[in-house]
Amino acid sequence: MERATAAPFVPSARRSTAMDSLSFATTETCELSCVFCHFNGPNATKKAKTISPELVEKGVRQYPKGQKVYFAATGDFFQDPNAMRHLRTTIALGHPVNVLSHGQSMPPPLLDEMIEIGVREFRFSVDHIEPRAYAKIRRGGDLEKVLATIDYLNERKKLVRDINIEINCILIGDTRERMEEFAEFWRGRVEAVNFHAEYYDTLKFRNLFHVPETRNDCHIQPYVLPTGQITPCCAIMVHAHDANLDWLPNIADTPLLEAYDKLCDMYEDPNSELGKICSKCQWWVMWSDLKDGATPYLKTIRFDQKQTGFQRVMAGLQGLARRLAKVPARP
Image (cartoon, rainbow, N blue to C red; front, top):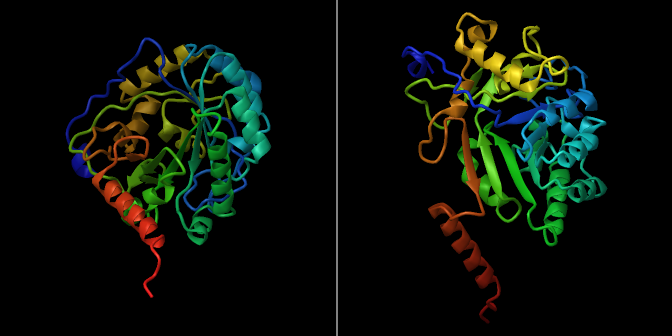
């Protein structure tokens, strides 16, 4: 990406008077060992830190009421023994939530409990549509478990209509060449598929949708780690797994807004510990302008909006196939 970073760049944090995003990665524990995972993959240094419910509640109470809180993990959210407590507390304090999981540990009673307390946004990490290929990527995972979970949520949607289900799919292996096929697989099952470029070597990306011509600013969005440290972005969340970043603020002793301001200050200072990392990082492509309906990092295909030409053709062919199936064979 040399062409994108050659021009001089002076970072500006584009501060807001109040934070507009808050995410918690609550645990490092995961029962899978995905091939690309920096936290629990086959070559990763596995850790088992889990944030306390008290620190999660402390952070949520400082966040403007009514704004969405995102729950994921550097492991899997439902390997956190306090996952449901986090959700109950956050919703009780007036926040909608978005939950990201690999979907291996979400039986119907758990889904029913989540829906009962008000969880409406479910996002699943699924990187292939063929069971064997999925199992090679998500080592220890079973695609059928995810499909069964999604099927159950769709049954519940018959009565709870505002449930939203989405897929996160990393562009790995043959995924990029088969994006349209993958999207059609999910049609009728989910509301959207989010295709993501793959990061590697912590701070770099491959399989971008396009290469931006100029560098742009990042959007500082606090992520609270299992250690309680507050990072400004996904990149530092990943980097913190192996690096000693004791200069990061910690939610245990730093108010969220103060931490946000501190991280903005550091981002704008090329000589700060954060600024030195940012100068070598490529995650800024997450915030680049759209081109052909995608940022360099992300392309989302929604099924609850106007169809693309490809989608209209596929829907027509599928309809024709169904009609032909009903026509009796000629004697």
